[in-house]
Every structure is written in structure tokens, then in C-alpha cells.
Length: 202
Length: 81
Image (cartoon, rainbow over all chains, first blue to last red):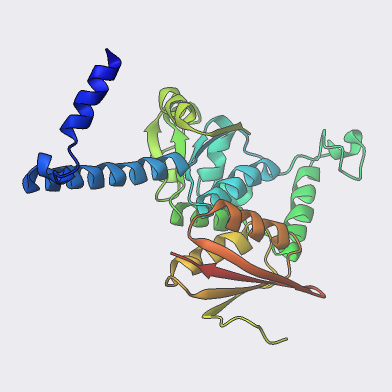
């Protein structure tokens, strides 16, 4: 049976008939255009697959904890990634224009401090530890928090401030740097995390 | 130390540390045209690995060479598209 079918097909594809004669010119043109469209859509699909996305949740507002999300975020943006940093609880202070300039390093419970905890707990020690760190950062040519925020915003990093904690901390939306996204909550953060290749909690 | 590449522009990030060499390289590349070569001069030793990682992970750029000379780390990045 299959042999019969085969011979029928062979008969159809008669060598003396032009293979394109089965289709008229308009049909061929339509097919070519369709192939081109499909190829283009494949290119688009490839690009969207390569577009990496990272979401960082920043919950801490101490001087040292403010750096990693901003450094990773601005670097990821330089890779062309889509970056969201969702700031909540003390992480909000990083985006708070005034507070971001006065973030403190905790001397207590920091095993790298050259003094025991009992001494680190003395009033003024946090300020001293912060000043020491700021001096080192300046000497090392490391950017300030403010510079990293501006840099991140310039590069299109979406810096988000959790609305619930803005209200909890009695902050005002105007307290934050221009360009910070407000009016977002846990559901927004989860949605970004679900779409991301990389999710970090700092 | 003259370069063997026809560089279109030089980016000086001496004295700056992570993530500045990467972020500024990316910004400088954005301002160039396809085929242009950017020379990046850094003092951050981490830039050797970072620029390579960035170039590998980013479309449209090719790292031509990296030269270490004392405290100076010079990178040649070509914009390919």
C-alpha cells in the first residue's frame, strides 16, 4: 500500500514539471513573507530569553548593608539586566535622601571591630566605627551610597520603597530620592521575584 | 606603552573601585559606534576579572586585550554592534 502511495507521489512530482509551478507567484511570495516573519519572531524570542532579570530585597539600613544591593544592582544594570531592588523596613533608609547620608555601622556584634563588644557598646562607638569606615571607603575610591543610588537610577534600576513600611516608619513619599518607586507592596515584590533569574534577600 | 589597537576613546577610572570601572565602561560603550574600541585605564586589580566577566556576559562587546603594567590595568573593549 505504501508502495502505491509512493509511486503516486513520484508520479505527481513529474520531473518535467517545474516544482514551483504547483504554487503561483503570489502564493510563493506569501510563503516567503511568512518564513521571514517567523525568523524575525525567533530573533525576538531569543532576545527576551537572554534578558536576565534580578530582584533584590533590601531589608537592612546599616552603612555596610546598604552597599551590596546597590553595587550588585548597578553592576547588573551594566550587564543590561532588568533590575528591581525592593526596599523594606530599615532598607528604606537607603532610599531616604536625608537618612542615607547618615547611615551607621554597628560596632557591637561586629567581629571585625578591633575592640571587644563591651567597649563597642559605649556611646559614640558606632559613630567612630562609621567614620573609620567612611575614611577607608574614601581612600579606596569606593563610591558613596548617594553616588551609587544616582548611578543605579541613571542606569534604569528600579529602586522600590515598600508602601506599608513607609507608613510604618512615618516616612513621607517626598523623603525619598527622585526616581524611587513608591506605592508598591509584597505582591509586587513577589511578582518581580517570580519573573527573575536571580533573587536575593539582603 | 603605546597601544596596538586603534582606540576611539580612553576612559580613565584610575583610583575608582568596584563597581565604577564596569559601570563607567558600560556607559562609555553606549556612547560609541559599532567598530569603535574603548581603552579603559584602571588601578583596581579586580577590574581584570570584572571587565572580562562583564564582556563575556554582555552582548555587543568584545574584550580584545587586557594589559597589566605595575599598578595599571588597561583594557581594550570593542563595540561590535
